[in-house]
Length: 70
Image (cartoon, rainbow, N blue to C red; front, top):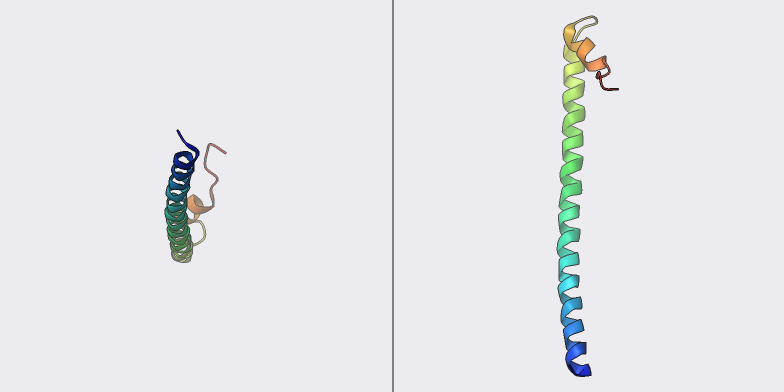
């Protein structure tokens, strides 16, 4: 294998890695956006459930109760 062919092979590998890195960055960005949306939805649902429950109701106790594995 000559130096030129080795250099070309390395440049090709770097180009593929750069393309893969850009794709992965895009995917991570999309996942972060979706995670933020899901966190906002969970918070909104928690507040709705908390607002529906009254003191001493089973719903309120279930929300505030620590799971048994803790």
